[in-house]
Length: 269
Image (cartoon, rainbow, N blue to C red):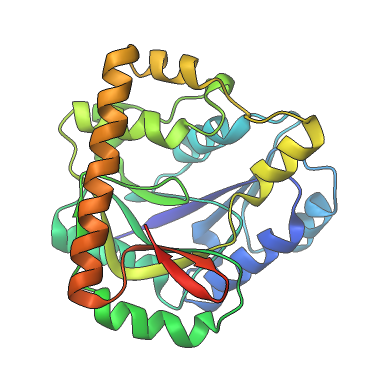
């Protein structure tokens, strides 16, 4: 089973380096990593040029997250394409464990469990303990945009991620809706877990541009084919399902598949 990890980047070299180093240290072959540089203006281009073993594509303009996802997915010839944020740390065997769980559970699109927020705990020690408890836990019908792996056959059924720049921040939700409408089995697994610092690039872009949102949510829902009532119903269903998952997982395991780090502790999502 082959895979390509596609990582869109725009500046924020510190986080890109941490992400790539964690992948390589965790057993992902360098040739299986593909960094898409969306016209960075910091030291990212120079760093990529020196990382001869890590494939990369440099864009002259910022194609946005969806554009980079589609570009990397189209470029890859692997069995699976893993779309990964650059502001994450991956544990040992993280990608292999994620895809093994997808095959075992019958998911064609799959995300790992997620720990978000400040890295004020020992992720290296906590991750294996977490996985040992949660390795058999799944959430069927949902994946998150921080990291999701797509089986190649899904591109034939659903197509590639949408490149519309007005989706900014809603690209993962648009792809989720498309997958669900086509009957693609999607899910999240506790067989591996990532630490996510928290949308570092998007926050930097918002601060620089002075906007509250990088995309147009009304346009995004129109793109998904949802009017006002359908949007309200979809969001309510998602909220209710997330609350049910969190309640059941915390009752059974004391932790959940999505947790936020706050004030030295965890909040369940």
